[in-house]
Image (cartoon, rainbow, N blue to C red; front, top):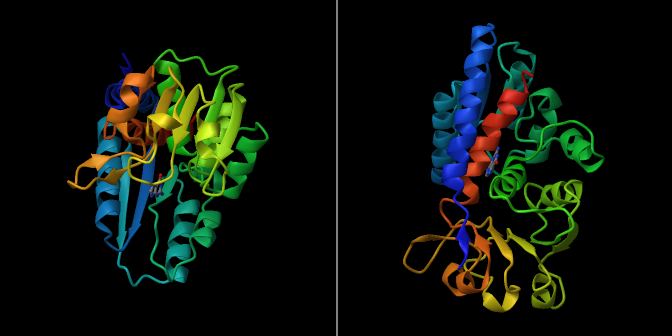
Length: 278
Ligand code: GUN
């Protein structure tokens, strides 16, 4: 019988711990502020940004809202980022992605001061993670490590297979699992015989954006399954990249969608904001 890894519960525990830390900092006169920038009004981004602001309020972090029109130019956004970089009140800067097509995302990410890069997307943050130096870590992979640890799952020495090689999830996930002494394999769309590779995994992490792609033939008996996907099925119901009902009888632990990895991403963003003043 598989254990369901309850990301909602674990993220609330983490946010409650952070809330206490933030209150103690406040007593010492230290306030934390996160600038949240959204360009345009993509409905999914509006939901994510709203959830991030809600989490800030819960933990006691000030969120400073910048809602810019779709027509905002790259220069205007760059100058806002520069202003926030130099504003001593602002501890963290979050520019919600995706940005409109006429804005170069990489340029914007690189403009954010690494000291305020609470998303962990700046090349300096990514480089620091790769060579084991201090820096902000991308929130979703950091949240997955926290989920595994708080669920009592040993990482050291395990075969970890990651499906997906994005800059936000797959690549930093591999670096973090390596830091935790797992043996790491990254698979992607050009991997030959994907099933043969994923069936080796003690811990299988899937972030490919394909609805219910991973079925029971892809998993080893007793594996731990982490599903980063967030898709809609044929009935418009939220679901992951893993076929949950199909793999459930075969695995030892699994994250549900929703309520698995998603809430941890936001909790780790709050964690990074707290880290920014320590
Ligand atoms: N869009 C989807 N996920 C994220 C995230 O973690 N951070 C930002 N800035 N944008 C996103």
